[in-house]
Length: 113
Image (cartoon, rainbow, N blue to C red; front, side, top):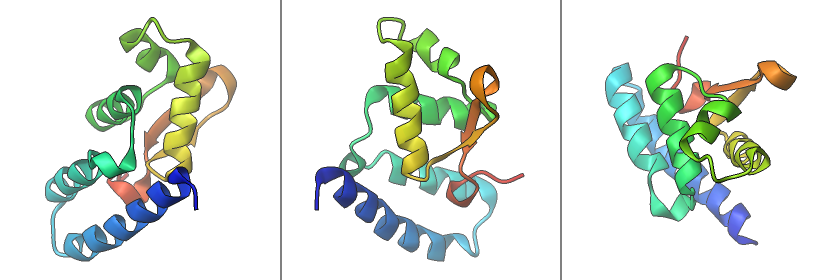
């Protein structure tokens, strides 16, 4: 098992524990707990990924250009790969295509419509 697979597995275990506690909680408490889980160092998120999640939580969505604005020294492709990694981990959901692409918190991990 590589580090990425171990990280995904650890997140799944942590998430299962959080889900049990969420059944009786309201949305604000769920988001706060989700945020603590996401910031677990064992997930290995980089600073750009953490900021992307923060922006998605605060504003309801995030784009490559918004995250790139926070980290202008990084290439936009680096930001895109960071966002794709968050999608792969199940933390963000991708919406739209091409220049219209934006990301929202994954429904099962703290986002509700």
